[in-house]
Length: 381
Ligand SMILES: *Cc1c(COP(=O)(O)O)cnc(C)c1O
Image 1 (cartoon, rainbow, N blue to C red):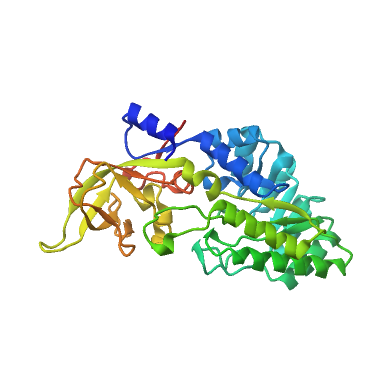
Image 2 (tube, helix red, strand yellow; image 1 turned 30 degrees about the horizontal axis):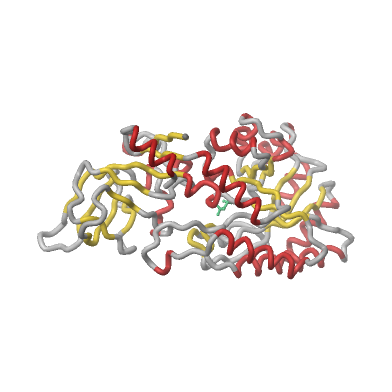
């Protein structure tokens, strides 16, 4: 948690649950990321946290933006981004939305299928396009394995088709899977990108860009070995080394689309314990129900994928095993059952808890009113 957030929380007793984000930290993360991959153009993945305060701060840093929908395109433009700095990076888009983005001046689009090339050729003629490669991301903390991308051979054919249909075949993209802790996954993807570059040269197409996607992991819970993540600088070095190895002195332009790594550690959620209970008298595990759960913004606890660190005011004393659950009347609203969470034995209803590194994929994931609970309150400082 940043000093600024600590000070803010000690001076203000805010209602819970609330996400508090230190926008300065987002800017620091942006600059740190830019230093790590010098020359790379950063396209912030807006979906991680689309708050205008964050987008405006990144516009001031001269960032570019990866938008997943026409709504995100409009959002970043409304926050002052220039259209030429926006990439419409979802490979699945309605043709009307492509046309709308094209009319707004967006000139860079992703695809991974013939149907999408046809839509782009009709609705955004003359645009730069890049093809997303399929990767299987077994070691990612949050899965991204089947839904997006195509094989290299198909990518080659589609980029040729794109040229023949009046689009500009610009490059290749991939996503190694969000919260990816296995750095060799970037090397696999970069090697495959190089194969595609070479295959296209035979067809007279010289691609000019590799988009590294997102996936840089951030530290969450630090207690278990499976929760250890490589540092940002280690990851940056591994990626830069791989690019040098495969592309050498024929380096294309490099784009990166960090989402999580830009905003996760800039935010915390202040929440409250609603109830501590047991199901049977001699049960050693207590149930701790918080006033935030899967539907209130902690959707990434799905399958206990993302294991947040939880701090309480009673930390330091004896702890015992718990099941952590949300407040809604839904059986699936259980955050951690198998992940081995322990919380203080004297934790009680009404106690405040802080859920750390929750700046990414929380406010943008919460329901609009499941069980009547309002969307997660947000505070940007
Ligand atoms: C979600 C997403 C990102 C951001 O991924 P992180 O793991 O949060 O860095 C980047 N690019 C694309 C295409 C995405 O879908």
